[in-house]
Length: 163
Figure 1 (spheres, rainbow, N blue to C red):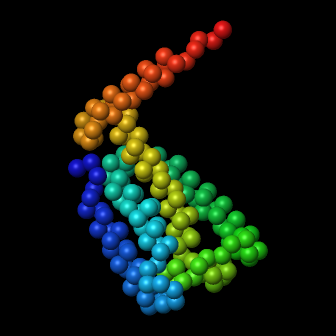
Figure 2: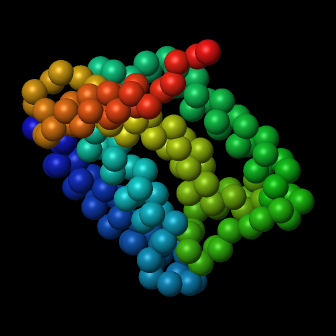
Figure 3: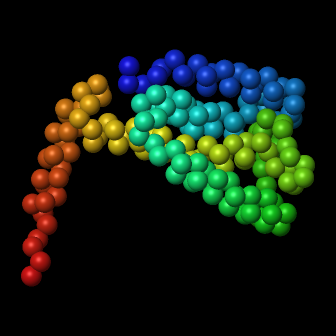
């Protein structure tokens, strides 16, 4: 199968653990740790679903470098500038309840954003594989190739030659 559907259970498990953690660690606010649930669905699920297909296409050294650069820039900006100077803050009632006191009560969700924002590479690689490979196992592959060829022909026909 092209998408690993069973990996969705990992996200369900993470959300259930987050609900339990929110109940015991941060009972203020609502029942749902909204920020973490959004991260689980929007960031973690695509990476779990597409990992099996994309793992061979990702340059893992570049991926790690990008992730470390993102974490370093985020620490410099958010921890040393934004939070201490009051540029923004977090709604503590919507968080899991795990805060790093040394970093001005930075929620753990913010750190996971720094790490998992580079996982958009997985989705990008998945879309690239669907549109630009000759793998017959991709659902709708022939239709995508036909649409792509027609679009490129149309684009070439509208380009005027240089004078």
